[in-house]
Amino acid sequence: MIDKKKVLRIVVYILLAIAILAVVMPVIIGAGYTYPCEDDFSYEAGGRKYASAYGNVLGALVAAYDYYVSWQGTYVPNFLLFFVRAYDRWGMIGLHVIMVTVVLLFVLAIFLLVKTLIKDRLSMLILALAAYVIAFNTSFPGREKEFFYWYTGSLTYALEFSFSCITLALALRLKDEENRKRIYYLAIISSITGFLASGGTLEVTSFNCSWLLLMLILCYKEIPKKKVMVVPFGVSFAGALINACAKGNFVRSNITMGELHYGITDALKDTFLCWENEWNTIFENKLLIVLFLVVFIVCLVCKTEIFKKGISTGKMLLLIPASFAIQYFTAFPVVLGYHGSALIYGRTTYTYELLAKLMILFVIISFAQWLREHIKLTIFVPVGAAALIIMFVIANNNIFNDVSDGFSYNAAKELKDGTIQELYEFRLEVLTLMEQSEKNTDVYLKVPNVPSSVVMYGMGITSDPQGTCNNAAAGYFELNSLAVEYADEYEFPK
Image (cartoon, rainbow, N blue to C red; front, side):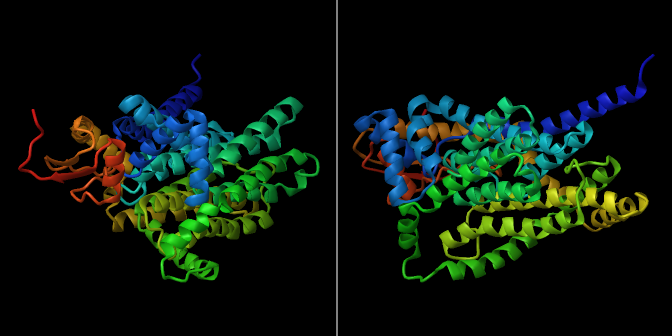
């Protein structure tokens, strides 16, 4: 006899898996149409220069150290950008392999973390879907492009963000593991990924260490019995010190500060302003509000658990200020580095907002568990209240506008109508013209206007031969100077 409940459960699992794929696949596929842009040219040229002088590995190490003492302490991308040289060594195919791999790793890292936190399969799939929607569809249009579709940005932000998620997931598994051999295995792997996560931008380094520290605080009673739990945090913190104390950070700060006198006290104050501004921005997206309320309802109905042994009122009260503190110290290095309360760039803003949203999601799931365990109310009261708020938000806002602003939504749309493919062919034509130009000459190219796209990143090369990106590209293609003028009246040479 057919078990109808089991069949229904399998159907629900399949539908959730399809929904997850619908959200993540357009972003993964889109990464296969990226192209070198902005700082990519300077890293490719610099890596080639150091490789010619010292060899690939030693050259990358020397270049990474020079960058460490002259610009920033991000030791992981410092090495990778000079060593991998995806475009220089393997062309577009190599670049696409790296970009797709980074996005795919991000997707898998989120899934691993959610799966580790939540054991119930139904809850896990629903919350994984929620996490992907948050990551790919709840930000200002196109804000994700520097994080996912810019080679330099993805190796400095997205890669380390993924390592941070993996580190927390492995550290949580280490906490629960009883097999001695697996304990040491998890300790070693999580320490490696934690060290790598701390080697990217300090924005990611901050919450990488904060997540691990919060886990240790919440599980402090278990530490005396399993001291190895502290190891991933210790190694990650050591990596953070290596990153933060780099001479290059101070050199860069002095160069970019100019005549401005901006110190730690100013940054501490401005970070509060940054936090307030970002929260207002985050909750302008009504789809996100609806999503959080739906998650709250799902966690109550499905009896979702993050804390196996239950969550005390003390832990719940700790999570709220801890969530704020993690967000605060994530923004702080950006505010200090850019000398003001704004996060400035899409990559820094997106990274902060993604972290903030995930922290809020974690607090909501935890609160739902606490409410179910400590407040003796019929489930219909909180579920009904949340449902009423959802209906109110939907009735008073055009939720579809927020949906249509989503990165994944626009990636799918532009892949379907051919915009991304057309833009890729355009960029490829421009790169080919630059590559075929006579060496050691002044090159001025006239090409058609750039096709418009919400999701793809700009190349950065303009009609100004003195522009930073123009100089970098000219150096890479061995030209004296380079300028590219875009206009409807021009055509690519046949």
